[in-house]
Figure 1 (cartoon, rainbow, N blue to C red):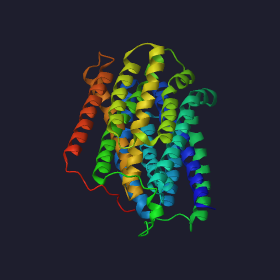
Figure 2: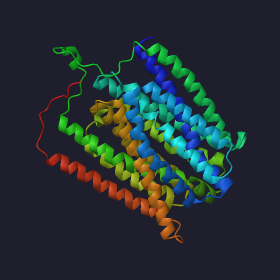
Figure 3: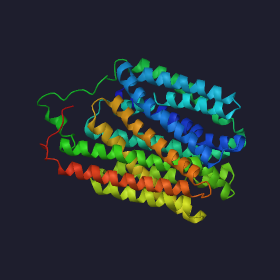
Figure 4: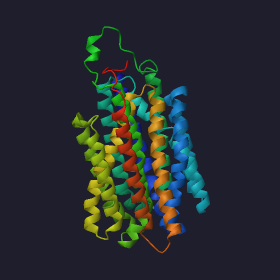
Amino acid sequence: MTHRQLKTGYLIIQWLNSISTAFYGYYLFFLLARQHGFGNFGNLCVSATFGFVYIFSSLHGGKYGQRHGYFNALLTGFIGMIISMIGGYFTTSPAGQIGWMMLWTFSVCFTWPSLEALVSEGESPLGVQRMVGIYNLTWSSAGALAYFSGGALVEWLGMRSIFWLPAMVHFVQIGLLLWLREKAEDVVPSKSPPIPAGNAGARIELTPRPIARSKMFLRMAWTANPFAYVAINTLAAVIPGLAGELHLTPMFAGFVCSIWFFARWFTFLALWLWPGWHYRARWFFAAFVLLISSFASILLVPSLAVIIIAQVGFGVAVGLIYYASLFYSMDVGEAKGEQGGIHEAAIGLGIFLGPAVGAGALKVFPSSPHSSTIAVCVLLCVGLALLAGTYLRGNRRPAAIDSIPER
């Protein structure tokens, strides 16, 4: 089996991981709303709990994969996720569901950093650009499919399908992983191979960018990406309530509210095909402004047409911000497992902050149904200011030697 064939196998595992985690992660809010009476406040608290656990679990999962091997990390994650799904299936109390969700969160954080590292390990900078693009297209297509079809599945198979269907997928992943590990023993290097001295052919593939500027954009990406997930997970937590206001069943909520998933996929495709956005700050700022305006429009304008149109802008914004964060993490970083863990931990920070601020606003202003949305919009504006500060500080620093870090 060739190196490229192995990476195709990793991408298949990643696609399966995305479709199963998206199905459970997003439709758990519908289960809590329908079976346990959770409203926006309750679901925002659950989402904040998920994000808080995700922050520290991602850092641990990334380091574990770097030190003990990506295959061992993935196997640990899949087993933990199966246990969580089985526990959730047989649990009827909301406290129990939240407990199993926390174990699932801890387990899933062993998977994403290792998958990100496996698809980019051993690649030249232009190879990283290519593989990160394929990786993003793979997981985002699965997430879009899961959300679009998830509402129909829970109406057809019952709400408990959010547990047993992902568990079945994880068993398949374990089988494929064990087979790939056997094939990969003498193929996948543990670290990115160094460029031999005098190898001019290898340097042709290097993307020319100053070291200091590269690190500045990495800091900008790690600043922006949490705020993208502030918006994403606040939106995910209140979608059941929004669906109720619009009188949508879970099936039609899945259809209507999955538009931004597909917009994100097309954004990933465009960014993959056109690398001209690399290391250009105006793309960051344009995406962030679009993020704030589209998020506010979705939740503050009671019009189905506006919600549909705003989701397109939302998908474009979060697509560019996420793509930049992962690309710069893999392009600049050497220890890709740990870098992937930091990238995921930044996501966890956003997952925690947005719902926590939203829940806090509803607690302080219970009579104002839009208080959570307004509070999160203010938080996103703070994020825009932090992004601008990161950029200005980076530009004030002395110019670095225009050279390429050794790999």
